[in-house]
Length: 291
Image 1 (spheres, rainbow, N blue to C red):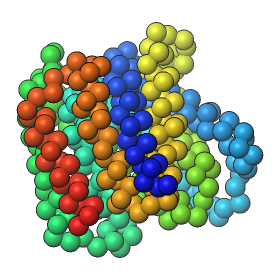
Image 2 (cartoon, rainbow, N blue to C red):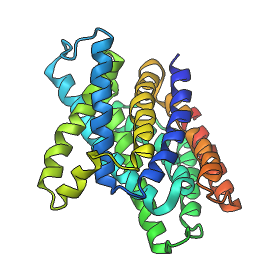
Image 3 (cartoon, rainbow, N blue to C red):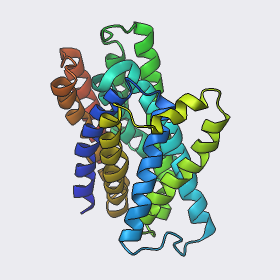
């Protein structure tokens, strides 16, 4: 079942990225991320209650703190970086940068969990990085500059590094915890940090205005429910019921779906450079995961 969850995650996340790209046209990244986390947290709490589970699960305090920390790093921080990158480079190039996720998971699993890396995995990481470099040299979208592309790729790299670190940090706790409870705790941990951060910011009125009904909700609400609720549950399930590396490579097929969806719904060009970059990145992912 873990592999099925990971594949469903990929399709749902690809669809969510298209909605979030549209949302980013009217909402700043931090405000959009706060909106997503607040809405998905409420949906998860309701789901936990409807499933008859206890929100205060009898787990050690260390497990709560680990899941909170994972949520702050992999959701509050990483998703803000992701939305900043998405606004600058578009869904197509971001799909290629997103390929850094699987190698990053393998790298942090090696550092934090003692999983070994072999020559094929190092070579695979090199291919992924090469694919990202090729993507970063792509012709800028209309109205963007080469500098914005490079900045967007950098934010994307930071996003993949932090999300990988956050999920590997939580991996030991996920193995002994209910999926819904663990997912909810990570979201709540991110929300606990983001609300006071938003209140302390100068543009807090603009940030909290995203909770007032607006036309952008037609993109942000489905994007949130698909990407930060359903996909998140399946993502945690994939990590729980299969090996981290196997789940990561199946999650990474979202890059292919994003390129296709972006060309259909966002009219982003499916160029030869994107094809070459994505093929190198996907080949690198396979080498990293199966090596």
